[in-house]
Image (cartoon, rainbow, N blue to C red):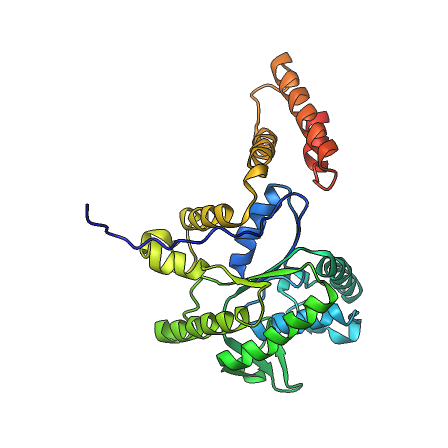
Length: 325
C-alpha cells in the first residue's frame, strides 16, 4: 500500500531517563510542554529557572550565570508598566515589589545551580535565532518585556556564532559535571513576526547550529522535535487556532516519540501508577460524604504513600493532603 506520510524515526537512546535521574530543562515554551509531562509524572526536573527563553545566546549567558554563582540585586531590575523586571528573566518573575522580585530570582538561581551541577540531563530547546540587543547597555536580553522597539537592535545570529558560544559553554559545563548529558532540540512553535521566510531561516539556522554543537562531543545529542511536527505531522490540523503553536495532539505525538527514545521502559509501570493517582486527584464526587468516596480516598492515599516510600524524591504533597482531607 502506498504511504501518504513520511514518519520521522527517533533512534532509541542507550542513555535512559529514570526516576533516579535529575534533569534541568531550559529554553522555549515547547520545553515546558515536554518538561511539564515529566513533572506531572513526578520525575526530578527543574523546569526553566529563568522562565521561557527563546534565543541560544541568552541560554549560553544563563548557564554562565549559574556557573559563576551569580546573585541579582535590586539595582539590576527596571520598572515598566507597574512591575519590576529583569532582562534575563521571563515575565513570570516580574512583580510589583523589587525586593520580592529579586528574592524569587535568586531562589530560583540557587536551586538551578545545584541541579545543573548534579543533573544527569540538560535539555535545551532553541526557539529563535533572532535576538534583541539593548542599545543602552549592549546586552542581549532574554526578554524585552514589551519595551519600545527603539530601545533595541534586533538581528539574527548565525549558526557559527551559536555553535561557538553555546557549544563552548556546554563543554565547559561538562568539566563541572562529568555525568551530564545534553539533549538539544529546535521548537516547532512558529515565529512569524518576520514572515514565513524569516521564520524558516531562523529555524534552519538553529538546526545547523544544534548539529554543529552535537558534533563537538559525544555527550551532546539531538532530538528532532521540529522535524517531527513539520515533516511527519505536516498539517495545520496539528496546530492550534493561531496556526503558530502545536496542538495538544501534536504535543502528545512528540511526547510519545520522546518517551520511547529516552525513558527507561522499566519505569513505565510506575508512570502508570502516578497517572492513576493524578487522575484520582482530579475526581470530583457528587457527594463527598459517602462511604464509597471515603474508601476511594483511602485507597489512593495508600498508593501515594507507598510510591513516596519507594521513591522519596517524588513530590506527592498535594495529593496526600487531598486524600487525607
